[in-house]
Length: 180
Image (tube, rainbow, N blue to C red):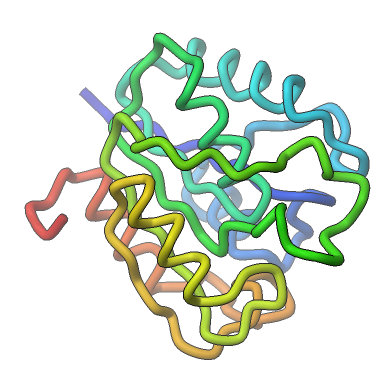
């Protein structure tokens, strides 16, 4: 059975130069399209994830970014659906001082183990979560942790293009490689 890939952008969505948008264009991945990218409501985002996974079926891997990672962690706590795995890139620390007020409903960060394979990727200079905090999330979620080096928030401003290293990590989850 073919594994489907869904993308889950974060606050404000992912613009055309973001690796998620590029992957959607080049690989045909489907975006989990939230109703409000600028003033998100956690329960609405979780419901949208639930609906997208229900439509896609259990053979799905989600490539989430930033606030999309936190929404996915909330979803995992309440769903009865299953997925193969998730690539959780630059999870935003919604508890840190100065986090955008528009997304305050996403704190505290859920810290229960995820019921699927996952990889957390973080940067040494991410302004939305320290490397230590991202590693803490990975440990709590039972995720493999990958330090991407100095890549900022691992978004369009990071100039990653198609982000080949991210595609390799996604491939590990899609193909269920034993490197996890």
